[in-house]
Length: 328
Image 1 (cartoon, rainbow, N blue to C red):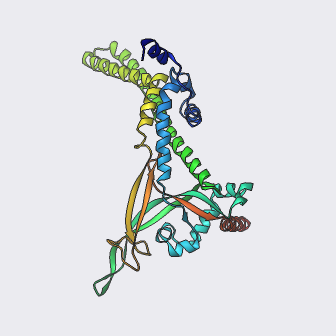
Image 2: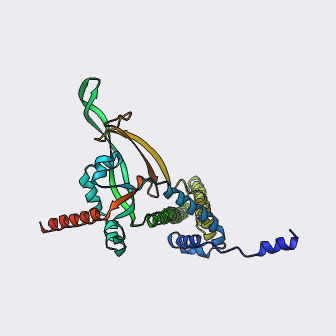
Image 3: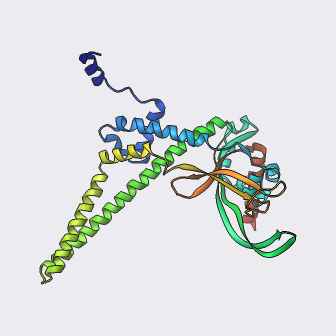
C-alpha cells in the first residue's frame, strides 16, 4: 500500500453505525445524560462498546431456559413450576394481577395466537422450620428443615411472538446496563454536592480559627481543607462529558458485573424441603439461572408460555374479586 493511499484511508470518515447501534446511542443520551451527545467523539468512542454490549445482551437473553408452560397442569407435573408457586391458584392470581398481561390482552394483536410468551421472574427465598422426617425406619418430629419458596412472581415483555419477546428483553437488558451507569453518575453528582458543602463548612471553620490562638488546630483544618478540595476536583473532573464518555465505554466493554446469569441447582421435595439428593418419587433437582441486574437482587429468570384464554379468565376473576372487595 502506498503512503498516499494509507493517508487517504486514514482521513476517510468512519462509516455510520448500524441501525441497532444508532438506536442504542439514542438510548445512551436519553437514559444516561443528554450532555454526553455533545462530547467530542460520542459516536466514535461508544459505537464499538455498544456493539459489544448489544452482543452480550443477546447472549444473555439466548441463555434463558424455556419457554416453559405455566398453568395448572404444569403445577401438577413439572417440579420446577410446582416449586415456583405455593398453590395452582397462585398462578391465576399472578396472571390476573399482572399489569403487563392486562395491557397485552387489551391489544388487538393478542388474538393472533392461543398462547403468548414472556420472561418469568421470581425471587428465591429460603426459611428454616421444624418438621417431620424419616430417619431410617423412624419418623421424627421437630427435625430442622430448610424450605425453598419463591416470591414476587412476575411476567415481563408478553407477546404472541417469541421473537418479539426476545427482542424486547434484549432492549431491556441494554436499558438495565444504562440505568446502572446512570445511577453511578447520580452518585457522583451527590458526592460532588456533599463535598462542596464540606468545603464550604471547613472554610468557615478556618475563618473562625484564624482569629483565635488555635495554631495546631488551624494547621490540621488547613490540611483537611486541601484534601477536600482535591477530592472535589477529582469528582468534578469525573463528571465532565469526555470523562463520563470514557468511563461509559469501559463499562460497556465489561458489562458482566452489572448484569449476569448465575446457574443454580437445588434439590427439593414436593413440599419444598431442601434435600441432599434426588430420588425417583419425591425429591427433584431443580436447575435454573438467577439474574443479577441493577437492583442487585437475584431473580430466577426463564421464558414462559401462557394460554391466552387462561390469562383472560384469570384477569376477569381477579377483577371480579376486586369489585366484590370494593362493594364490601
